[in-house]
Image (cartoon, rainbow, N blue to C red; front, side, top):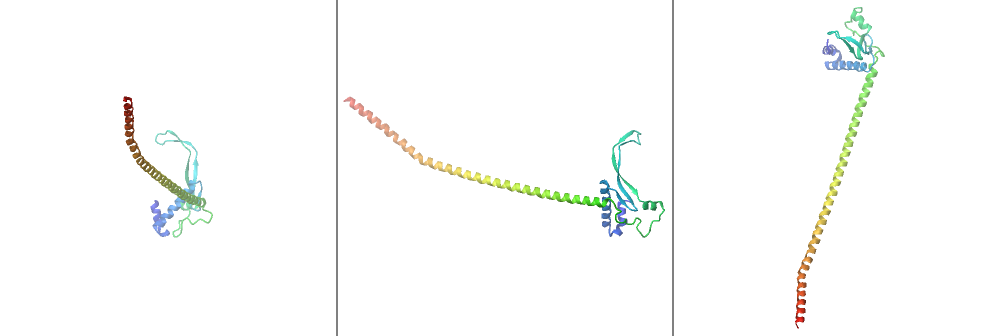
Length: 211
């Protein structure tokens, strides 16, 4: 019997195939997580699952016969309960209209309950922490973007104001230069008059000497 056949076998009792598949997945997941964490999962009448540490050792390759060193490792182990053993050996008859392995009394199921609760708590805490971290990061990015935008806007305003001032200064300088230009032209025109006066003075001096 594989997993799909197991689901089909309990589908009627669970109210549907999907519910049965979810139940099987949940049970297997709980057992695996508990054993990986080092807990022992014990179900009265069925058996127990536990983690076993194997020390480093030497083994032989069955094909070549070569001696190979095997590293230290951990393996899962299942030990059948006495009720399970009795049913398999035939010392007890398998009930037709009843559950072969009855529900364990309260407190007999060890390991998974606390482990599952811890795992669920850790997952929830991790999700909350991740969500909070993402929100905080998003807020920081948004704040940084707003600051950068504000700085750019302020810089753009300052640049525009400076450009306007520079333009106004250049315009004023052009006006001042334009106003001063005629004065230079007038001065240039008056210069020849001085030269003619100097010539007249020289003529007068020459006439006086002749007399």
